[in-house]
Length: 348
Image (tube, rainbow, N blue to C red; front, side, top):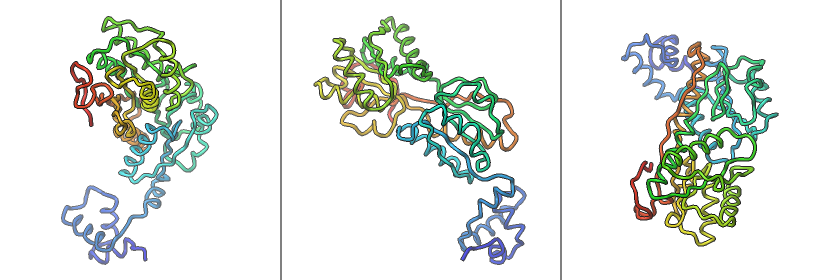
């Protein structure tokens, strides 16, 4: 049998209004009264009707999260962070998979779910500023990812150039001099361009050659793309002493090729990935990776939507989430004995 506010009020010996004030976390309730009501809530197992609560505010209690690749471990972990953060505010998350396709991103952004959601968190790949500027719906929109948009909405991303530079700086510090980049995607891809830019800037700053012959373009960013890119580099006759991959799946694919060819990681070629997904921590050689603060990105995205719903944060914000370099065996070897040089990050 469902426990009602009336049941809690009778058990606590207080009015229904008092119980409602406690359940809705109103400030003007004394600590003693709040504790009294909470004891009755716990004793009876009362659970508030969140749907009714949101509807009283003219809301649905649902936030949509639209991502390009749910099969990508980074986006799966990011989705979990958004869901966890939304739950703390009594919101649930509706997941949309766009596949990075423009037509699907347009459908999501133009509000085909507008009647059932209170806000949209979108990580676009193909949309242009004009596509989003012409949105017919005024459901709050928060953007994730590295593409720059001149729009009146919040945008949350890490500094990809600085993060890429940190990765390359570490490789140089442990003695690498010919650093390849795999994952410079063919066609337009702002994240890839930013990471290649960071690769180039840091090598130049270190007085090393940013050799375009060591940049491997790919059509995708999966394990197979990393394998294919690494094979092309090795078969070209070039032998870099380090590889910086666009993301962790590509780095893992590259390490599989190196293992098959009898190339030792990191003694012969050091490898760094990007995104710090769980998979990279448990291979035969654990992967050094740029680690975006996914929990913070999820929290900031949800808080940005709720701030808009509450009438706050009127001016659009460009929010930089944090990152660190998680240093592991693929650059230092076991117990840090693979290569010399200082460690520039810590494993978590």
